[in-house]
Length: 339
Image 1 (cartoon, rainbow, N blue to C red):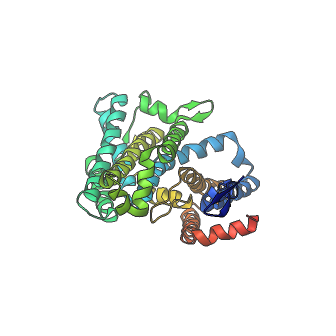
Image 2 (cartoon, rainbow, N blue to C red):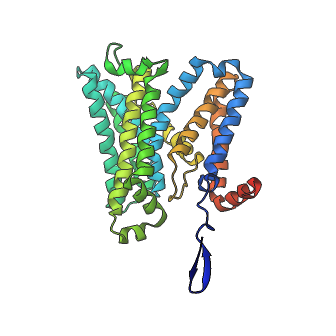
Image 3 (spheres, rainbow, N blue to C red):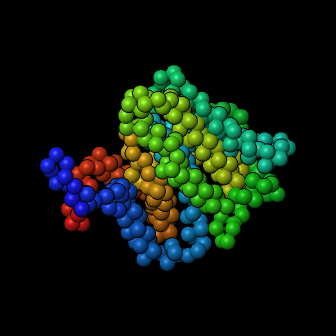
């Protein structure tokens, strides 16, 4: 029904709310399509790809990347970066194995490990938020320091974890045919989804990344937001470190090398803006699956494992290119779909 305002007729129903396509993160949509196409290719190239055993193995491999990736999504959305997550995971894996070997119950060790991961994250967050040091510099430095502590403690040796411990049972156990690691990754995904889309913390993280000064003037403690975003990545890396040690049956200071780059690649590939202000947990799930899919599929078809980082790097370049042309890409897809 038209309404007259200052002799101007306005139709209340003229303006339609944005449709599903308009509200969709276009880079995420594209990467979902790319992931599907690559999955189809590997399914055709290798009959073993779609086997239950391989899919379960793929989910297990993806879990640590997804867990840290969920937290990294908040970090990058807030306009920060965390290069220390791989070192934290290695430190936690090695330290957990040492503590269990010393006689401490593995359930207690797992709790301590998560707290240690959170502690490292809080150190990163404090230095970035309250000391004003760029996150790239802080986490690059702590990456070296943390892994150095792990190497010093273990002297570079792997520390075995006994089969009877709870940690080991989590690493090798399954629920309805799916590993416990995959289920824990799913829980992390759901928690991240709720935090990003339904809680104020997610809104504040996005605000800090897009316009920190404006959100600070609105009364939000932006320093605390950045600190807790980085703390969450430390906690997630601690959880991942426990799971990596549980799965391998040992803790090593040399584990999780390059994990931080895989995680960042997964987050950015999924559609989170590398420069902050836009994050997507669903996209991170897609990115984590895609990075795992590439490694898993190339192995099945007999390709050299050294090809994996090349392909992953090329996909990452494509994702960043799309991110930097987000508006043009969105307009292009709108025209193609007739919107």
